[in-house]
Length: 402
Ligand SMILES: *Cc1c(COP(=O)(O)O)cnc(C)c1O
Image 1 (tube, rainbow, N blue to C red):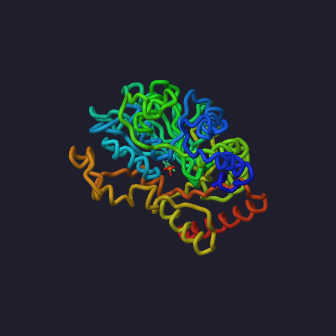
Image 2: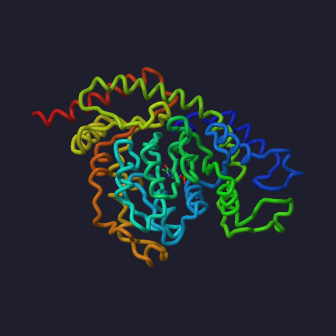
Image 3: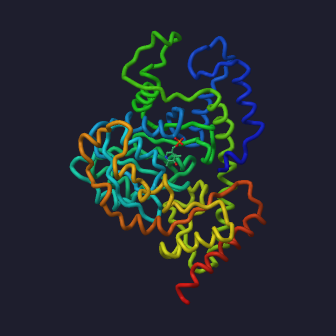
C-alpha cells in the first residue's frame, strides 16, 4: 500500500485548499472556489502519467469500471468474458449493468490469456472485461489479436495497475475504456476514488454524463443543463480528489522504489530452489506493487503459507483462499444470492457457475503467493524478509523429498 505509506504534508495542503472554501462539490460554484478544482487536477495528473487523452474521476474503481462497461455499450443480456481471479468488483460491475459473465482461464501473467478468451467466445459474446492483476499487465499483443479477429469490445479493469504499461502503452488504454482504483490499498489512494480513462471523446462524454445523472456539464446553471442520456451518481467529492492529486504526483517516485525493491527480492529469492515468479508480459512496464511468487504446485504453496503463519511472516496474500479475489469462495455468485433480481437470473447464466471447470486457473492461483511491496522498506528490511521467506520455503519443500 505504497500510497498510504507516504500520506503527508502534500496531501494535507491539497485538502486544506478545499477546506478553505468549503466547496466540496466538483462542479460549478466558480465565484466561491477561488480556482480550486481538485477533481479536474486529479484527472490532469492521471492523464500526465498515462498519456490518456481523457480521464474522468469518480467515486471508486468499482463505479469507474461499471461506467466503462456502460459507456462502451455493454448492457442487459450481453455476454462478457471475465477472469476468475480479480477483485470481485469486476464481476459485480458486469452483473449490475445487466450483462452475463463468462469465466475464462488466466495464465501465469495472472490475467486472462489470449487462449482462455478464445475458448470462451460464443456467438453471444459482446466483449471482454480484462483485469490487469497485482500491478502487472496482460499479454496484450496476443489478446488484441483475439479481440480484433472476433470484433469484441475490450474494457480494462486496471484497478490494481495504475502506472503499469505494456510496450509503452499504459494499462486501460488498449480497449474502449479502462479504470483505475484509488482506494486505500492501491499504489496511490484518494481515500476512495476511481478514474476512467479513454482515448475516445465519445466514450469520455458518455462516461461524464452517465456518472452524474445525465448532466452534460455545459453552462453555469446546473438545473438547466441538457441530459443527453440517463445516468446515476458516481461522482467523486473534492476532498477525496484533493488527496488523489497529491498522491498521483508521488506515483513516479513510488514506482521507481517499488521496482528496485522487487528486483532486490527477486535476485535474492531466485537462489532458493522451488521459488518461481509470475510472468510479466512486459517487465519494463511493471508498477511492482506486488512480488508474485509461484510455487511448484498448489500443495507446496499451501505448506509454505502454513510455514509463513507459523513463523509470523506477514504482508502476504494467498489469493486461492481469499473470499474476494478468487472464484472458489464466490458461493454467493454460484448460488445467485442477490438482494433483488438481476438480469442474469431472468435471462439465465451462460455457464453453470457451480460446476464449470477452470483447471489452469486453479493450478496457477493455487501456486501463487503475493507480497505487497512497500516503498518505505530499508535494505535490511528486505534482507530479513527474504531470509524468512527462503527459510519457510525450504521447510515446506522438504517433506516431498523426505
Ligand atoms: C481495487 C479494485 C477494484 C475496485 O476498486 P474500489 O475503488 O475499491 O471500488 C476493482 N477492480 C480491481 C481489480 C481492484 O483491485
